[in-house]
Image (cartoon, rainbow, N blue to C red; front, side, top):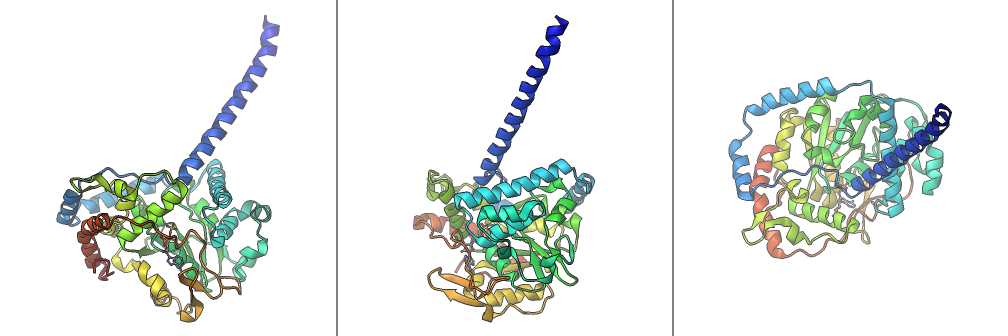
Length: 410
Ligand SMILES: Nc1ncnc2c1ncn2[C@@H]1O[C@H](COP(=O)(O)OS(=O)(=O)O)[C@@H](OP(=O)(O)O)[C@H]1O
């Protein structure tokens, strides 16, 4: 009996172990797929539109928010363990790599700059082989700047493009990267929303090396609508400069929908998703495409931690009609010499957008990839009008808060 137990237990244990490993792999893959369909974002609860408008405007940023700020900050400082676990680091990097690869394979993100940067993120592991897989020579990823050759140190970002999704954040980052005093990670690290548990060392390690005087940057548009992000960034450095590219919230919502539709062609129409109840005109503010555009509400969260002078708002519309003008404001805000000027841009008729005459580290003209500047579906004008009416008071509040009239309500 004892003899047979000795020889029968080990195989069953090993089968069990294999089963556990297979199950974890399956679950991890499912999670990545889930994230790729944009379902990892926050899903706020629905609120009746008119109630929300009035309730929000009436509250006018009460004192309890400063209490909330202190509480949140304390929680974050307690939770943020800089000595991250090695296991988490590995899984985080794998996630980035998997997303980059899956995007690449599915053609969802054809922007070479994004891929290039994703390769750079993964570079600490095996840049050369990943580049080969992606069909890029490692030369493609070279910026031609000294720090790319190994000098300098990795630093936490001093400036972050925190939003908004579909605002024009990729265009802004790609344009800024032309500046010799800016070094930026191309992929979205999602540190302050999805990967915060990985710790600041993990985050720093994603950054490119910089020399004295160069600014490290990243962009993750979902930060703007992430409740925890302001306190977390504040805990990293209260001096962090924040940049938000904002765009007409109605067009932004349609752009957001267009992106989802390109990945999931079977989703309901924009019109049906907009309303909780079309007859009563009740707008579904739990739909993220609508919710993200309530800029005044999200900005209020940031103002609990950062003064207005530390946040720059870039007009997504002006970034297209006058990229050099908007880039001038951004360079001033970052305390940099105005090196990026109208000489750097040309309007590409085929693309219908401004493009760079020379991309970072290249002598060739460069437009953003095909996922930027998509054709939007036609939306029922009545629904568009209803959305305009919904956003108007929030837009007014936002203009008042920022001191800039963005012209979305003309
Ligand atoms: N120069 C240039 N080239 C191409 N596209 C440009 C440019 N400048 C701004 N845009 C607008 O950027 C919109 C995408 O915004 P984001 O880059 O913030 O999107 S994302 O959140 O990172 O997915 C994208 O939205 P869609 O037009 O809806 O595709 C563009 O309108």
